[in-house]
Image (tube, rainbow, N blue to C red):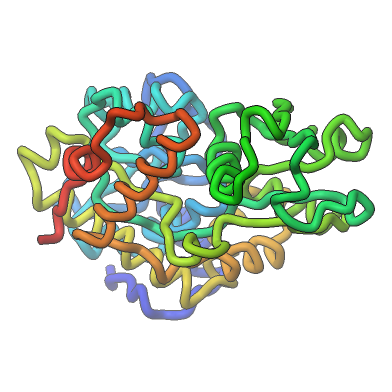
Length: 344
């Protein structure tokens, strides 16, 4: 079999061949797994190192994960990676990684930092990209900036969601108290648009693809996003690897990190092709819109090493300002504890 050239342009027929030749790996007996998704494991060399990588198959920001699978980046690094769609809580995900039910996972920094503060044996090895969180309002609301949220109600999908945390942080920085000056109401993500239409909230905040789709379908005004100001070059999606894997088999952790960074760069260079690959996991999504979302993300920003450690510390500092991370936590020390420079 000829090896896959990750630089070659993506072709639908090639994807179909890959999917048909994939191993139909059954989901492991682990909470939060989804069934009936496209093949989650590419045909691998019998000498390849087997790994389980947890991800959220409904989040477009994780597109580099299936890209790495279908375009051969995992195989290039000697890995046989099984993708595990995890729909449970972040605590459950990190526990699954820490206890070896999964070997690594991709998720949002603003979701992971608090659980990591509590001591899970999971190490962050790389940033994946920035972007994908947005705050929207109707064009008739008069809300044109974050200051306009004072005295208003914002709908979110989760009171601990990355979007809620991020916009609380940015409100705090402009002198608006996110706890006393703004009200937050929780709705299922697919009902955020209805809550806005009914006037139950005056703004909504969430991540792509949900929030992007609402912006387009309901002709909403984008008040802010997580690429504004100092966050223009800040990562939001990160890779976490089981601590014991790094200690016992650093080369494998390094290979996984390298493969995902390469896949992320490929995604930045081929957003249309990456959207087609991801659409297999989101059959109802519009591929053109998925590609537009990917173009709006900063997939060329995937920090590693000391640059990544510093970004973790900055987020820790941010989360302290809104009471998520303990005020007494030393952010620099915390970042050094939860980060592993496997590429050094």
